Amino acid sequence: MSVSQNTVAEIEGLFSEWNKALVSGDPDKVVRLYATNAILLPTLSNKPRTNHAEIRDYFAKTFMPRGPSGKIVKAHVRIFADVAICSGVFDFTFNDQSAAQVRKSFVYRWNGEEWLIIEHHSSLMPEQPVA
Image (cartoon, rainbow, N blue to C red; front, side):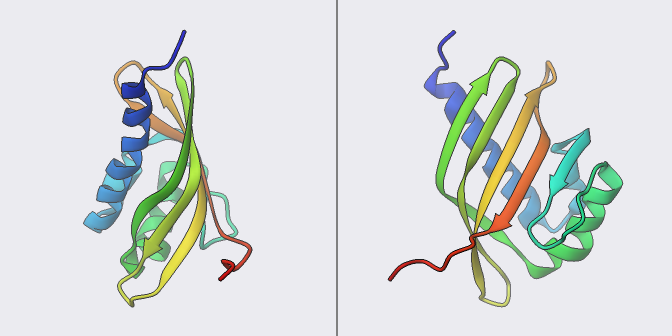
């Protein structure tokens, strides 16, 4: 089965949906995008989050208070039946005018009605950009 460009665009668009929820300031809107058994390996915490309560806590107390907004720099999408992976480099800006470039991997699963995040890994880029 070949993957249509519409499906690839749909998977890339899921980041936009996630970012809109993030920018809303409402952690419940973000958590709704995750499956109940999702795993989050967050950018600003060493603790893996393995349920909705822990994922909500991270966004509500650690990440969202900084006022983040992200955009895709480069994304790679792969789709395997009911699982899709979007990995790449993303830029984030914050309310205090700081910025960060991160690596992210979102793994989604189609539940018959919608794509939900089942695995999300995010980490700061380990090397400074070469000027």
